[in-house]
Image (cartoon, rainbow over all chains, first blue to last red; front, side):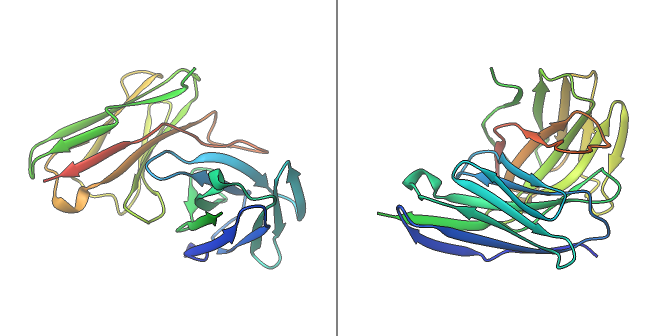
Length: 110
Length: 116
């Protein structure tokens, strides 16, 4: 079966660093995506990992370990506008579907 | 500049009254998807079109239908909406079905449907 787990909610302080974890068990693996979704809006693409290791993009970095079925999204120098849900999604082997996790709702406090 | 456009942004309908949601894209992508996202839940794929080929997810209710008259447009028809169909409906596109490195979904802004 397909299963993706993320913490439901996290809280952090403006200027801090936060790590959002994602574990997955899927029938296949063609890559892992992180999307950001503000309340009432569509998800927007943040990052993509298909090989093990860390991908850095500005304040955001994403890490993947395929052997462990594990990824994390690291957000540095948090800003209030980073308050949103962060969705982990895995592209399965058939290339026809993204399996989304439930999302982690991040609240950034002043 | 909007690349995937959904109309309307908000839609209210009555229990049992058919409703159609629309999506258009300017990306000329081959694949168009419809996702349902209920409050605080992950988006759930309903179906997708690869060009004109329709692919229905096994657990998508028969109440949900889709049409893709051309490359640019895709419609979601809910024949007899129930209260449980209240959700955000997201349209997305991707260039191809075999996504390869760094292919990704492009989402529209969504239509928030309320069934009363």
